[in-house]
Image (cartoon, rainbow, N blue to C red; front, side, top):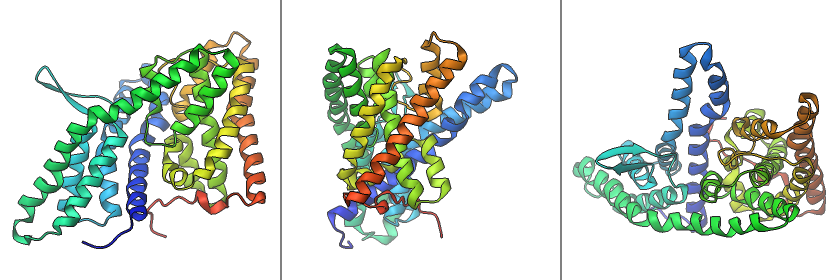
Length: 350
């Protein structure tokens, strides 16, 4: 088993997870709302919408695959990890004798299962080469999946516990509530925790949903502006569809980014309070992804279409982008961090 530092191991897990999320979510993020709107024009758009929506269910599989690629595993080892992450994700549940797909699964548990699978496979090191096709799926697939099934309920409690804490924010004065919710969701979106799951767990809606959305948007522009300084245009462009989780490894490896994210989220949340930005439980954890945030916020506005559109442009573009540029410029000039912190490893060939 080759030697590898704990930091390097974790970085590979995070990088694989980030790419799996991006690839799995981008099709529906780009075309989901478009195909939904065109559904009445032709049945083909309904079919295309169902296809892009279904691709989201492959996130556990894709995360397992990309993690395996990070560790340069063989096809059999990769397939075993894919099986383990799918089962351990909890995305498929047995309900009354029928297997039911439920979302993309628990990302934290997926990463735990993948880590265990990689460690077991590396430890085994194909010791019995002639029996590899039999032994590896069991050691690297079944055993990690079994452990994942056991850990899933406990890992899910982390989301529930955080949800309970955040739920208390909704009982506070509206301005304080919006600031705290915006800042909370701004940070959660760059961790393995699911903002969507938390929003549903506490039935976040109205001003609370709006605050969560603008907080996520603040993080998006913070990372997108930093990305534009060091990455190619395609990578930065993808951020607006895949969402901030695409740069989860960058954040977790560089906690100093918490500072600009919180400041930008607080200011964006303040404007959300001024403009009375609202949303639904279904839109609370998405931000700009699929335009869920702006579209739902627009539906709550009682001003003229022109004024409402102007408010959305200010709230979802001018303020977060302006703050991203301002904080990035100040903090880089102060030497708190450098542009290179935003470099994304896409795995593409140069």
